[in-house]
Image (cartoon, rainbow, N blue to C red):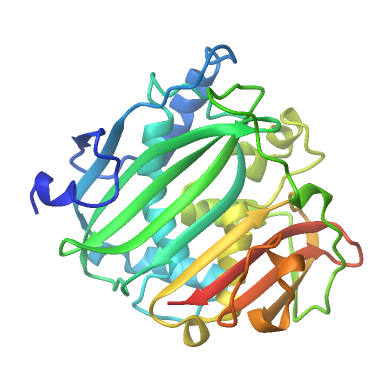
Length: 321
């Protein structure tokens, strides 16, 4: 596959393309991001690097053991189909490589994961060769700083199979342009529904997900690391809770093509018990699920909260396409 064929997908037309020979290792990137975060301070506007990273030939034939471990941990049935959460894991190092560039204006350390949206437009199977690309776009105001989208795409034979958008917040920074929109969600009244599942998450949950995702951020794996960032103990990865909710919906109900979205609220402290409710979208009023945005009648809505409390951890949707 040529570079020109890869550039026809979704990166902004003004962006240049940097081709890498292989997907980078996440551990080294996180160390580089920690070091590079020290010199990145609020001041002036935020200008993102206009570059997309891409790897043209990612062979998944050797991913069988990795995929099996991921599926077991998240509660997905054994399969040769790579679910959206696993595609996120594959592409995450490339997105991280963008965030640790010297000209990326926001610090990797302390970035808050706000939400994730992914679309699976074609099943991706073990053994297929993938093209993976990632870039940052749309730095914009948030009431607590600047939010930015990290976009990752996976193509098979030149066909877009997966597109994921992860939105992060850098506190204290200022975006050029208008003021932050009103945060209606923070004022939304919410009452926990009847749970359909209960997750008992042990203290090692963060380390277990780190082993299959490569994300060894110390807030998830180390009590001391978590306390250094203001948490009383380790917290679960947001993408662990998102992927486990996706598994609760299940491959039969979400279908081969689907959209998967999640918004994060309070972090899940470990150990913890989380109640989860999976419901048909047409059973849930639009005002209580999407802040007024219609979910439509198809698909599923899910919520997660601290068991026995009204502490909401996340909400999301899974919609067959």
